[in-house]
Length: 193
Image (cartoon, rainbow, N blue to C red):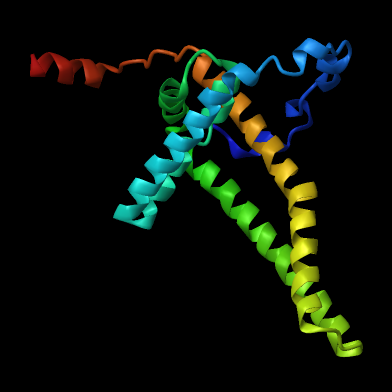
């Protein structure tokens, strides 16, 4: 089971991120375009499945959306997997971690709502002091919110989700320790036979 607190530890941050860019080559720019079809199929399949489950009710759609949150990362690491295999692996990895992923999504939504409220409050205060046109009162908070979202919030949460994926992947790759059986469990198993 993944521990939510490990995301914020310093040693979990990506190391040597600039190593990939030390010797760039022109032919490497388009090297991964051959996998675009697989990534597109993954996105379409995920959207269709989440939409169909959302038709039943909102909660199953949310659960299915959480199931496939790691599929793009799996496909990026293993491009030969294909969309369906990446979705299956994502479901295996997410099992037992849905609560933590849901909390991250809720924090992201709340941070966006906070930015919207702050930017709207600023525009209302400006409008009280110096009246401005209505269209400007609507456009400025929207542009400010989108700017803050794309420049600060989205990259931050992508780093968190990537770190979470790496941690969950490491946990799922570790061999599980066999459980010790007690004498009472052995007695129960013998009596059942």
